[in-house]
Image (tube, rainbow, N blue to C red; front, side):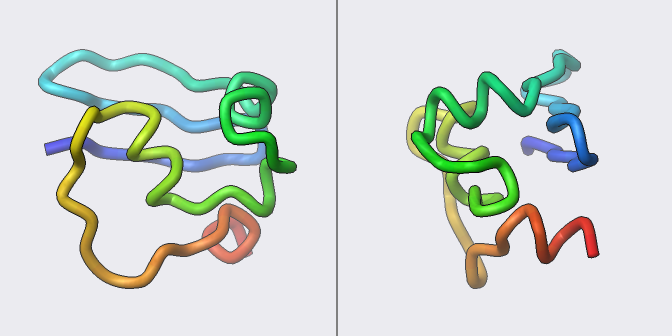
Length: 65
């Protein structure tokens, strides 16, 4: 299971027991979008090759509000 924790500067990730940080600029470069417009599903797809996506995608701006 992958855990994503969002804040204004990026995302803390726990993936297969490994903790790391995805900075806002890296996410923007990888998705071609401004960080607030990126969805949690898009971030998960950056971490996992074929994630099991469930529920509606949520924008970072909605998560942080």
